[in-house]
Every structure is written in structure tokens, then in C-alpha cells.
Image (cartoon, rainbow, N blue to C red; front, top):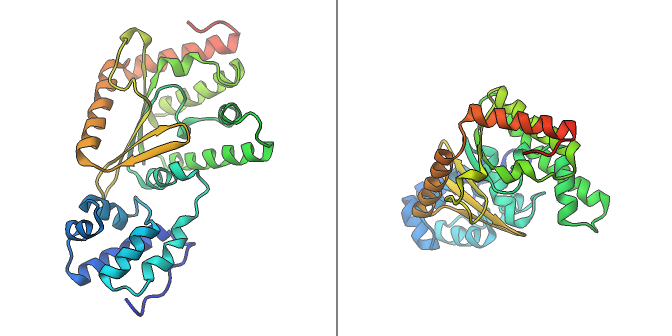
Length: 280
């Protein structure tokens, strides 16, 4: 690849770099699994790099250059992928989310980021960091709202959200903010842009009590799951773990109210918040 030019960071660098990786790998006669073994990662991980659903990290770029004889091409261009407006623990997940064809998400305590309104996100980030300058909070909110632009497409990705009832009952930002936030979710469901279910308190123990969960499916790459904690997150590609997380979400769907009953509950709670009543 001595004649290759560096990539233009303005034109989907992940996809371009992934395509170059596939070309270089095939030129050397490696399968995805074989190259993965040399990097001590799975073949599916290589597939995700090539599909652009994962970003190439510098440690892997240097080894790839050495193994494939690409004269530092991947090391140089890895810098185009290193910049992200999202926190380090979420940057890879945001990249994957942007190209997913299907997203399934369980919201344990919060409305998922893709479905949040500006005022709701503002209240969340201010609660996370009560002493942060307003400019820092405003930037975090703007970045979160920018992620939601993927829902501007009328059909892709398919977003299926299961919301714990706790998401509806905790008045994040106050009643007016909650009324607006839940109305936004209900409107998306009523317009058939998303599918939403509510997991009621009455169901008791359930499969995902340990925390929130996001599953992502892709056209040309294996599925991923993402689990998150305070200032930390893990993007999972291990097939057995992703299968376990997929089963967890299926169990949540089975325990939750139907989409039509969930929408009725959402709209009822919106009215309660709007009238100043105690949601019940």
C-alpha cells in the first residue's frame, strides 16, 4: 500500500479505513479470523473494523501496519478516528449507533439519549455535574441532541425501547420537563417511528435489573451490545455475551406492556404531569 494516500477525515474516515483494511488483508491472503488471531482479537472484531462499526485504535493500527506491510498507513490515518465529541467510554458506541440498522435499548432509570428532549438532557447533565460551567453543559446537551438526528430517516434504524416504569415516575427536571419529554417519546411511537414498551413495577424482578442495555445490529457486521456505568462503558462483541444480552432484552419485551398499552400509559402520565397531578 505504498502508493495509498492518507484519508480525508471529512469523508467518513471509519468506512474508508475499514475498506482499506479489507483490501490490504485480502491482498495478503488473510481471513478475518487469521488476522484477528495475530492481533489477539476475534474475527468478528476485524469484521466490525472493516464495516466501520468500530473505530481503529492506535495499538491495533501499528500492529496491522506491521503484519500487512502497509508502511504506517493505518497508524497515520488512525488519527482521523481518534477525535470524538463524546466521552471516551461512549465514543465507540456512538460510532456504532450511527451506522446501526437496528437498536434495542432498555432504559432503567432514564429516557434513552436518542429520545431525550433538550430540557430533559439539560436536567440530566446538570444533575451529573452540578458545578460545571453552563457552556460545558450546553455542549453536552447539543452533542446528545445531535445523535438523535439518525431518527430523521423515516425507517432506519429501527429503534425498540423498553422503559422501566421508574423512567416515567421520576420527575427529572420537574413536571413540565417530564411532560414534554414523555410526550416526545409518545409522539415518536404514535408516528410509528419507534416501538416503545413500558416495564411496569408490578412485574417485580426481571432479567435486566443490573442496569441499562443497548443492542445494535448492522447490515454488514456482527451485532454488538453496550453496557454502561458511571463514567464507564463497554462495547461487547463476544458472540456468547451478545446472545445472552439479546435474550435478556427478549425477556424484557415479554414482561413489558404491549406497545399499545404502553403508549396509553405514557400519554396518561403526560396528562398527569401536565395537570400537576401525582402520576400513579
